[in-house]
Image 1 (spheres, rainbow, N blue to C red):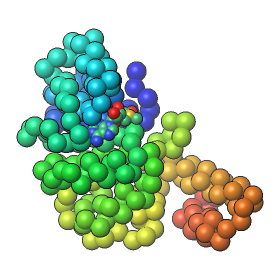
Image 2 (cartoon, rainbow, N blue to C red):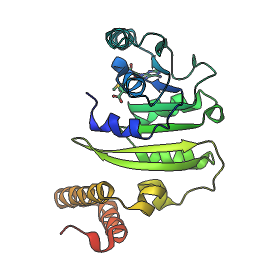
Image 3 (tube, rainbow, N blue to C red):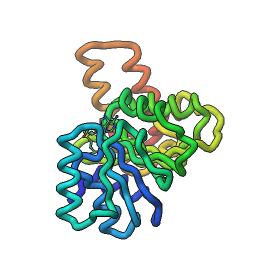
Length: 217
Ligand code: SAM
């Protein structure tokens, strides 16, 4: 059974594409993609032996040998040429940045990134490289998570507001994104009450501008 976070990532994978899941503890996502006819073939990449062994066990349990392929690899270093889509989820900004910097981004159709930390820094990295944010989703799964789909197609740099909150999130303003903003605002107000700082108040007012009349008072 996939968590809502991983399920939403799976929903952003185009059908009939070969996927490489970087940091694929248990190979949960690749097995789901192949079992559900989304991908004909998927790779479960892992840098650590323990998680890779668990991925192998899960692949065998699902009878997916040859369709889900375990790869002992730092990021995409050992990725085959047939990979279309790359998933990097459940890691922090610095690890994700290291993985992106160590590969040729233009070789892949697109990346799905779910960073556990500093999502704005991921968007800044994408913006500074002139890449394109093609889609975004905010997911609630105990915490709020952001999933970013980007490609190496060229795009003008994003604004500071787009880097902070996401250009597609800001355009689409879907329910979960608005709930996330309300939650973030509430948490900032609480922190600001305990230890007041001008940057907290500034972010609160920025969020309120984005929310307009949707403020959950
Ligand atoms: N992707 C899964 C998810 O979102 O639930 C698993 C996340 S788990 C917290 C992170 C996994 O990434 C670990 O199994 C770790 O060994 C692996 N990992 C960390 N750095 C990596 C790298 N540079 N290349 C491949 N795997 C890596």
